[in-house]
Length: 207
Image (cartoon, rainbow, N blue to C red; front, side):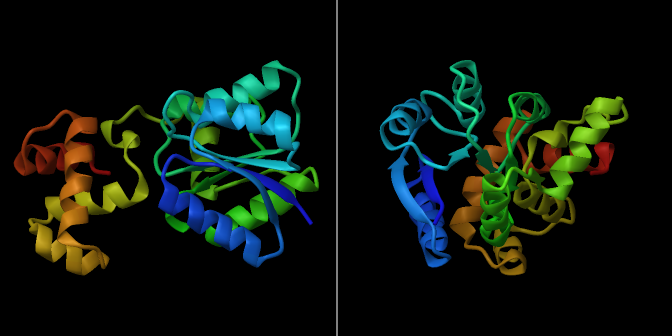
């Protein structure tokens, strides 16, 4: 049995991750909602593998990983992310993340990541691995839409096609409320104020 610590500041998502892991025979030895709490729980519970959300308050997943390595803790760490920028991605690799999975489709992959990490093997989502390769070779252009996660990019594409929130929700099997929340976040990340500005930026950068 693999003993796992899970850190994620969204209770619903954290509960879902824990349920998935328990269903395949893993033991959740600690469940916390921020990086500082994770560091304390690691010392108290000595998990085999640590699963960290990248975006957490107080201390994010990447800085938590860095703090672990700084104090000589080499145990396996798997990062979960809805959106990770280039700087964070390179830092995660530099500090020895054993697995990096996108939340959007992480269920089976994160299980594989944890098992692989326990066995001393690394697993990084193929899309993120390609980004890492491009960043290291200097072939990856710096584009505004790199700040967005896969689901956010899908919504931007729909906006660029002229779809309204209801149509986007139907196409992506989401609620209109969720689309509004996503768009609010997207506007902030890309520093645009209207759907028109967003569509223009999309066509200029051709994501």
